[in-house]
Length: 250
Image 1 (tube, rainbow, N blue to C red):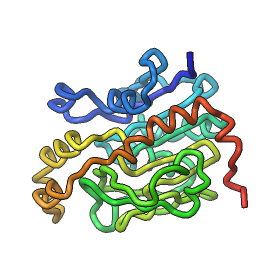
Image 2 (image 1 turned 90 degrees about the vertical axis):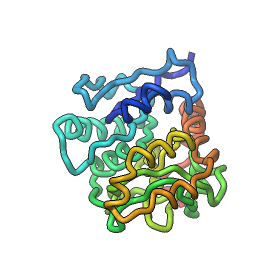
Image 3 (image 1 turned 180 degrees about the vertical axis):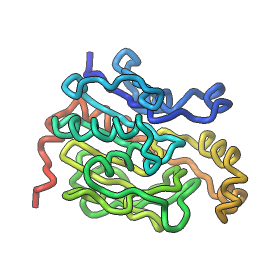
């Protein structure tokens, strides 16, 4: 049996969508492609107690409809806990809100996206540093991703390394430490989930100056982005692939 993967829930999706398709943790579990017995889900947003950092062997932090800048008590507790996990060398992946909270917890800044955010399918381009990264190394140089965010990592923590960007977002994927990554995009979203998000948020998008119809027309599948979760689970199993590369490498 492989290592346990802890999924920290920073929130839940829309109730009607959850009733039909499951929730963030379900989609992440499917993407990781591991036996469900290896998954431990902790609803941090609901006040569930976080495990001792020493008890965590791998970690995924979900997205959320909350904002990092709201500094809710549960997210501040999670923010103080995350650096302790990272310092232990535990493999960590933060998604959307999880990515932003990880950046802030490690010394970066998070705030409203200067252009209002990104919604729908967006093209992401890998940085040169991604070629030797154990998580991103074999991905295509350019690939589509599903995004839905109004806030962003505005300034990176010290020593963080950008692995991917888009036209409107310079920090789409970041390596925060030797075994800690964050992605602004949603590798757990498929096209149906992304379309549902655009439908639920139609009025909000219009008020923010976005065209939901145009966003729907541009939707496409994102298999490379979705593969990231299974790549992460394989990386957990092969710790040598993580140790073989350091942020300090030339």
